[in-house]
Image: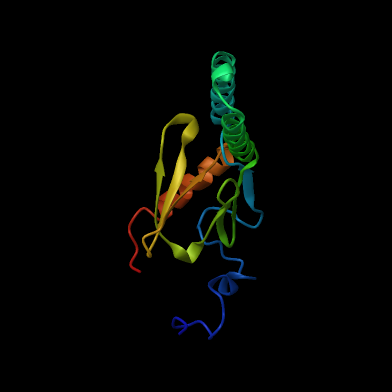
Length: 167
């Protein structure tokens, strides 16, 4: 059953298509706001941690190699591949804010439409600030913004959705 005011079978985003009104007053979404999901400081920190893990793993391998069998080498290699893959996705992830809502690529792609947002808050400090969004369905999603433009948009979204809206 469709909500009142929406024709049967029409998606929530279809109501907004072609509408010049921004879902957030004071925020121009005629052009999407996009950028890296994680700030430069966050990515540098992740790089430093990855290098430290690699150095420690290399040292441990030198000491433990004679005691390990071939299967242990495969398991450790698979763990290293997962770590490097996660790191690569962290470096490539992007956040986009447009007229349809928020989306973020990465290890797990996230997307939320404007009409699904029940409450939004800014969390974190410094280079790891994120927008935590809750829906009326008990789901929470954290969106990271690594540029000043994304952070300013997150502040506008949080101000607009600070109060819990009824479902």
